[in-house]
Length: 124
Image (spheres, rainbow, N blue to C red):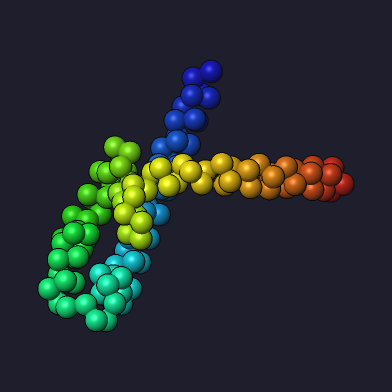
């Protein structure tokens, strides 16, 4: 029985490590994109002062490692930040759409199983 718990613990640890690495890769890729997010949101007619204030508001004036650690700390405490477009907290927006995503997953697993089980039996 302890073997099972050790295996479950290893899988959980590997899953958490995978999520961490994926978040680092995505954050790094976004950092490498050209352009200024604040300038893109505000448009070309925005003054440099407005852009600088918006960058401060979004935390884009901080070094990348500080922004990542702030985001990671927020995620670990359940604070996913605010949506840039709607200015609402992200977590309720995600939960609001969760039921649709869960329905799609259940239907996809159902059809995958419906196809995979007969295909596996035929292959055997």
